[in-house]
Image 1 (cartoon, rainbow, N blue to C red):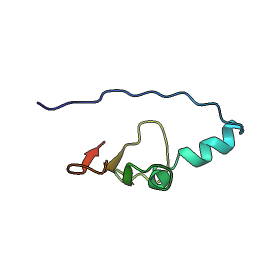
Image 2 (cartoon, one colour):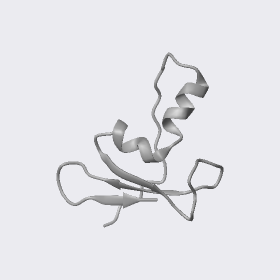
Image 3 (cartoon, rainbow, N blue to C red):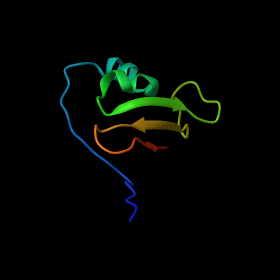
Length: 71
């Protein structure tokens, strides 16, 4: 059986301006620096910055089993 994750959510309170936070999280290529599970992220379809409709692919590793990708 294959599981498909269609959405995810989390809430955190962070003492920072929205602009400062956006600069940290908007560049998905930095995600591996911030997450122990995400080992790589790349923009797709020629994109190089965040924008509405832009897609990226992530490679995940949880310590057990094979790595997996998501788009």
